Amino acid sequence: MRTLVISDLHLGMRLERDVLRRGAPLGVLLEALADVQRLVLLGDVVELSERGPDEALAVAELALRALGRRLGPDREVILVPGNHDRRLVAPWIQEMGERLSIDSSAPVDATPELAAVSSWLAPARVSVRYPGVWLSDRVWATHGHYLNRDLLPAWSLGLTRGHLGRLSRGAARPVDYEPAGGRSLRSAHEAISGALPEPLAGAADRLGVLARVATMAKASRKLLRPELARANSGLLSLQTKVASIPALIHVTQCLGIEADYVLFGHVHRLGPLPGDDEADWQGADGRPRIVNTGSWIYEPLLVQDVTPPHPYWPGGAAILDDDADPEPVGLLDTMPASALR
Image (tube, rainbow, N blue to C red; front, side, top):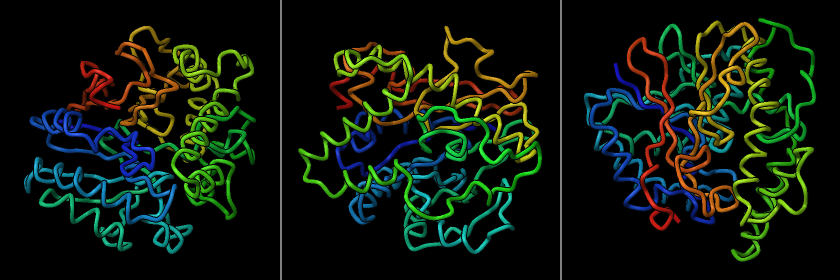
């Protein structure tokens, strides 16, 4: 079975950086589905954290209907919500509580929003898993937001602060990683940005990205400019290596996940790519090996004036063929920025 895994579409972003609202990128993705038997949407498919859901869902509907039509009734879509679209399954997560497993199956109508998303993906066969899904006996896939627990601030691009709570191998449950209440710094920033008029929202979004870059100890004020996107993306790649990937590996160990490969999204950094050190993308004993599926958003502060292939260029994905190793790919690497902005 050939599987395509994509994440972080963020359909319905207020600043319209979600590239699948545009015809050319969506056409490339639809073409990539030609020989795929299974599509995995690995979290943050719909941007439900910035504002009310109606506008974001209206944008998402067009792209999701196109995916469903392309796949047809004989092929499958697996939806795995992330932190930006957790709202799709939030009441169900609360109801499950300690019964939540690493590969729980949620009803496709767990919320009205999820029922709508599932209907748009028809006639493809739709299933919903959370917080992850076994794609084979060797490969487990999850959005990856559980890694935030070990970062400071508690969001995808924070600094490592050690293994919070000292959870040991095999001793944790998914419910231990679910929010206990209150707002994180990340969610507070999104709420503020979502309430601002668009010119101010753009400025707030830029400050948010720069704040993420500034979490790196080597960041200089001189680097925090859009024209230095290469330096900014380099710093965030370093952060992924020294903080996010170790945190994700710790999560899998605590949950007792014995996988050769773990696929995740969340940090928007496609990899490993040629030139990356493979040792940075695996556990100390070589397992699990990590693959990130990148994103489908165009972030000027990270890709302005760069030439793909690039780890933060939109269009990231992973291909999985039967028992073969997952392969990260950039589906939009030949597409110019003018078609994505």
